[in-house]
Every structure is written in structure tokens, then in C-alpha cells.
Image (cartoon, rainbow, N blue to C red; front, side):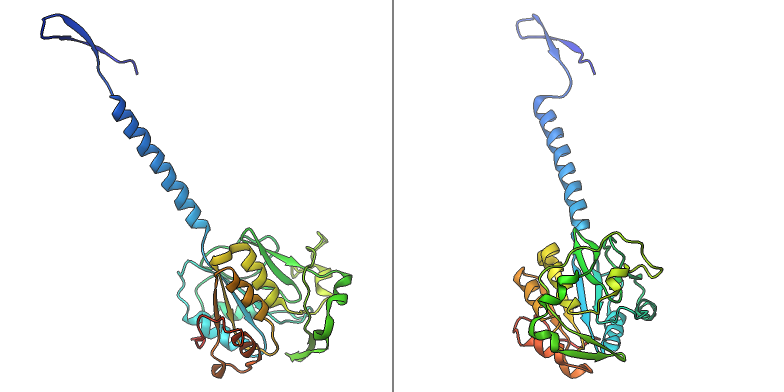
Length: 270
């Protein structure tokens, strides 16, 4: 906007032109205020995307613990919950339906590429390794060389739900190829493999992705799954919780996790 010239008489009586409008100091204040407002908007948007993500690992006897945990959990914590369990690849999971009955948060089966949102519960599908990258969930599958990495732990077998599965450790597995998905949404080459240490796998992925905003909870189960992942989360200053062993049906996973001495809390699920 054009500035108006105002005629002002000096002490000598001579007229002098004077520009009216914003002074330089006023303009600087407005610009500074605008920059501060933009900075606050960016910080608010950043905080909205940076919420804690809770990984929950459960195996034998874990359903009851999961139900108690989610039933006692407020619906507006601002956190996201990702449940990873030991389920046979051919098993049709009822976990989403069962857990939906005890919480008001949306409960869904984790889909490949699904963006994690706060106040939501995601269930890992049977037979898939679940990973997270840039706060999006991904279904992972081992390749044919997977068996070469089994080592001594391949002889450890765990009976759960009427089926037999083996535990194993792998350092790295490739992403699932973009094959045609069956009706249940799990890639066919994922279904060929029984779950190994899916809890460790997800916890370690969670630690890498959200660092100090990662939280892990180890619930009822046998074996040692979850221990390595708990160590990874504590290694990035995340939080670790382990179910109090006397409140669990099976305490193997809990004892293994507690033996690390890294658990921050040891509560009952409720």
C-alpha cells in the first residue's frame, strides 16, 4: 500500500515531508511474530506424528493377559499398540474380534504398508514377521536361505494351540514380494513359514524406527522370544515392561526377559 506524505512544520517554520505508516521496528516485530507462529505450527505437526508406539508380545496363555491389558487401558492414551503373537501360518486368527470386545479403540489386522495411528490397536497376522519403518507396518517373509540361520535354537519346539512350531533367530529377512494376496491379506510365500521369533523381530524393528518412543510389553508365553527385542528397545532409551510372572499362565518368556535386569516395570496386565 502506498505511503502517504504528511507535511510537518519544523521549529523554524519550514515544512518537511514525513512518511506515515509502519516504522522499521514495527515491521520487524510483525515479521518475528509471523516466523514464531510458523515455527509453532511446524512443531505442533511434528509432535502429532511423534507419539509412542507400544509393541506387545504374547504366546501361550497370552489371550487372557491381552484382554486384561486392553480392558484396563484408557482409549485416549495417544499411543498406538501393535500386538505380535505366535500363530501358525494356516491359522485363522480371531484376535481382532476378541480384543474388540474389551476395548473401545479400533482393533484391526496389520496390513502391509498400514500407517500407524494413535489410539489404535494392530494385530500381526498369522505366519508373517511384522516390521515397522517410518511408522508404517510391513509384512516380512524369510527366503529359502532362512533355514541356514537356525542354529542350535532350531531344535527348540513349542506346542501352542494344537500345532507344533520351532523358534529360530535370523538377522535379516527381505520384504515380501508383491505377489497376488489371498483373501486373508497375507502373501502366499509368507504362509509357507511357521513363526520363529516374531516378537523379537518386531521389537528390534520398533527400536530402530522410533527409538526412545518405543515401548515393549512382554506377556505370558514359553521360550525366550521378546528378550532380544527388549534389549534393543532399552538400548535406544525406550521403555520395557514385563508381566508379573505369578499372574501369567506360562512364565518362560517373562523369566527370560526379567533375567536381563532391564525391565522398567513388572505389573500384572490389569
